[in-house]
Length: 75
Image (tube, rainbow, N blue to C red; front, side, top):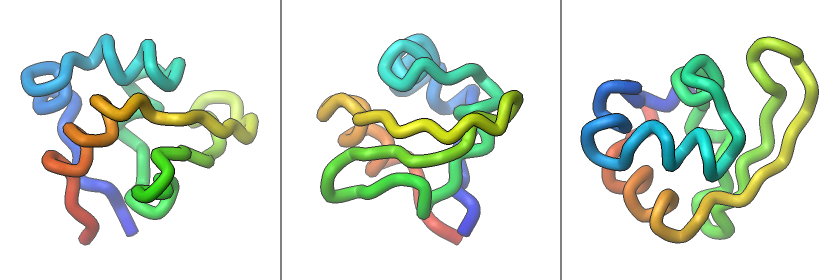
């Protein structure tokens, strides 16, 4: 599944900086997140970094998870 997220939407609602700081992601990492990369119960994100392909695992802050749950929907 592809995660529908707009970087502009994140900038407006959450602040792109919070996601970048929370996960250590670039804009490209954020825009290529897929719904199934996120464990919505625990807030754990497991994915390969877009540019390097290096596998990563990170935990979303509760505030980040709540806002992403409101803003994202699976296709």
